[in-house]
Image (cartoon, rainbow, N blue to C red; front, side, top):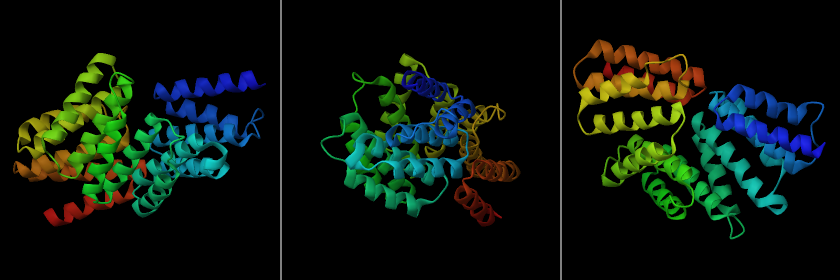
Length: 296
């Protein structure tokens, strides 16, 4: 039974890595509630974390937050600090993506208290990473920069090039969202591009890299290049995650507005609202509506 359960958990993890989110969530949910579920709290927490990540990847943010919260309630840092930290990370990410920023920041402060010398350096880096993300989203830009600097100090391309690539890609996106278009941001973009070229990446990885380049071009005042890059991100709406499409359409709307194309700007901003609502990111949808009202 234990061997079967562990192998099935590994299978669910592989499905998550392959971005087969629905299949991962179904398999992990079966491990939680199905006939072969375990009563062991640490093992159950791990499966809830997988469910949370899969639901988030599929854009089901409320369900992701519920699963992550269930995981965090099953273990404490006294039981297993590493699993507890991973559960809190998943909860914070789901809350932040759904726009529940006050809740996400409160969870960040709790998570910061949990981090100790017992936690692996790579996991500590990921903790700083997620706290920095939420700080940026809460307009605590200086704190976001500081936490991302702490995260960068723990990551090494020699130790884990995949994590290095993902961190630089995500850090660039957060910096750009805060309108921080400095030399450090450009270095993050270039590191992510180089590392992803070396190790390869998923379709979403390449889309997010292109989204960062489009955002950078927009902030640099090159609206034409931004439009070309962002339209490429939106080219396959049937397979692209709604969160990515929402961000791309929002930027497209802003780029068209900057170039004087009011009708194209409005069309893309309305599409951004639809995509954000489809992903459960209601706060982002409301922000776009405010932008539309200001532009009218």
